[in-house]
Image 1 (cartoon, rainbow, N blue to C red):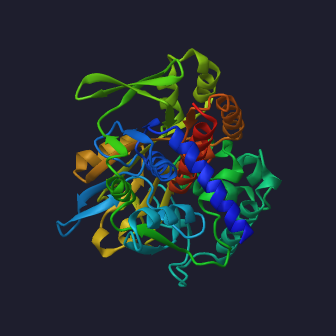
Image 2 (cartoon, rainbow, N blue to C red):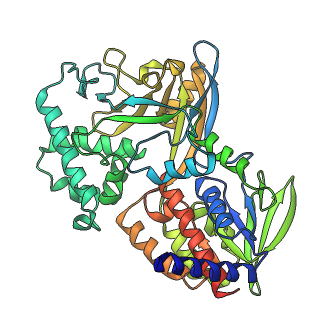
Image 3 (tube, helix red, strand yellow):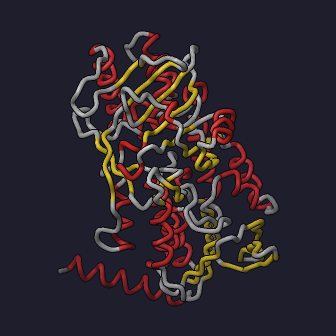
Amino acid sequence: MHFSFRLLITAFFLSQSLVSFSQTKVAIIGGGMAGVSGAHFISELDPTAQITLFEKEEKLGGNAQTVSIRNKEGQLVNVDAGPQYFIEGPWDDYIAFLEKTLGSNPYQSETVDASLLIQREKQQKPVLVSPLGMKLRGERLGKLLKLKRFNKEAYEMYKHPDHWKGISIETWVKGLKFDESYKNEIIYPFLAASLGTTVPEIKTTSAVDIVKLFAFRKPKASNQFKVMTDGMGTLIQRVGEKMNPKQVTIKCSSPVTKVVRSKDKWLVTYSTNGMEQTELVDFVIFATHADQTAKILKSEPSLSEAIQSLKHLTYFQAKIALHTDSSFVNNEKPSFLNIITNDSNQLVSSTMNLSMISKRLDGIYKSWASPEAIEQLQKSGKLLHVSTFWHPLITTDFITQLAVLHKQLAESPSLYLSGGWSEGLETQNSAIISGQHAANKYKAFVVKGK
């Protein structure tokens, strides 16, 4: 009883603080999951806040790009060109957010059994192929047992990350008790394909952060992943539609070009229908990538050190193609993830066979591929869609620089840098967490006083 009374008193004084600073104007730049969740958490915390969400594209979504393409039957189906699958546990914040904003059973999902194939370019015999379900497919048992042992090593790091803090993938893999050929032919290409980057780049990344992409299950746990039938980008748009239009104004096709201080406020310059406009706000959240944030803030002298830190964060480009070319996979030994390497064990392509998710996606493939391969797909008439993504390369230096950046921005109480990348690894789940952190900083700003 005493504890409940204390909670009521705390809530009362907090509500009084919020009312005393009513009509606080908030600008959120970026309409991906980080921006949309930040808008939701702030509107929930402070019903008096006036929030404007700016998105440069025609619709919300950010990296979660859902596109409609025709399948073999000529039917339009939704496919995620960006992030696609999720699983309970590492994505619990994401699932809870969708249930909270969209109601019970907010989405339909399909399941896919994880299966892996690694194959040399222009060769039919795989270097490695995992069982399909519980059925072996001619693979040497020794290689599969090594893969299981590798997963166990990764899971240990996932559960006890402090032991490997500051260690790169290359340093970690060098310490694993596998022969060098296995590391080069299987481990490095698998890790590179998991992030959608190259083998040389994956070696520089933070081991602790990269294993989060796949080492989220106990070695004996189920290999099933879930995929949103309507697409992750579609769900973000639905969350946006649920927001109170009297409190949250969503401006798509409105790229922000500049943000500068104006006394104790922020002047936001953006473009709509080719016309430059401005808006004066009290609090700003950047739910954009670090390089875009640096460009928008470049005219603000008080943030010069933070801008340099933002520029120091490394990004890599990934082109994702949706297509109908079955030569990217091994049709005799179907697997969900198909990794093709060259004679030097460098990644040539990484392809998801979407037909293994659902019959509605039969004959559709999703590939990380080179510009040359995409050009060939276009010439053959098999290219359905292509998207270009920029992702942070989570090196150990990136993690160190990120900590410096957060300290620098602690001195700016009315500014927050959000986005999955600001938490380290960039996923839909980390984007939700960053939205919560943005709301926490807003709360501190409002309670303290503008």
